Image 1 (spheres, rainbow, N blue to C red):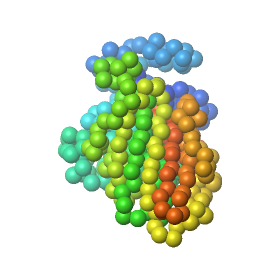
Image 2: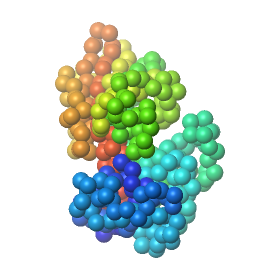
Image 3: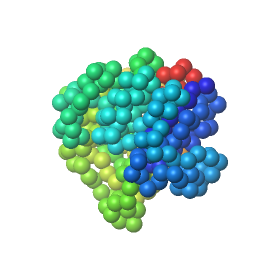
Image 4: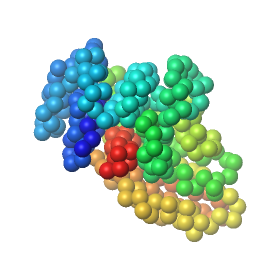
Length: 325
């Protein structure tokens, strides 16, 4: 039985992961934590999320219980802001706990990326050197071997799951990724531009979103990534256009995607495209693709739940891989 502490448990992702871990027979929750300044400290989780009324846990301020986490927990999950995770991850790692960080604070191995994309200097290069990118279907061996796991972003998870099997077939032309996320991707904090009543389908972060270099780094090739905010709660649909090498056949593409034949959470279909409703509230990724041999262009669509496969359920995958459950 592994004991897991969840920091940032009042947010959508932290609460979702709490429910997932609570349902696991081999895992227990050491505690749920929020910042000392959080308006949610001292509240039962069920007061914030009535659908979790079966979970009798209260949100505690982290400052009072950090030492208890070290003494009692086997791992800590950070569903916190990037600049907060930066320090917490390094400290808990130094105390010997396995760390599963859902922020972007440890996703790049190159320290020079952090001032540009996250607005801070990375102060813990020795911890960063131990971090593994937690794309569960691709890095399982590395996830099992380290105690510092950087759980991928939601858009990169959808995009990389679709593109990585094709890496050896790609030309130098940049893959073009157009992806739409539900409003929960913006977090629980109230903001006018992400208010459900204000949202209308629109692109944002054009040619400057921090997930672009994350995708490019893990794919090994530059991409054009355009995210969109949609007026629905949960889910991501990424539609990706790529040019494949001359002579590539439909059979070659099918063979490339056979890498997922033994991956129970990834479904791949030829000439049949997914929709968001297929994956909402599940840990699954659905891929659908079509290839034109004459032009060499392939279109692949990837659907995930941004709070599940894009965050909480992938964190759970990483936890189970790391502890061999």
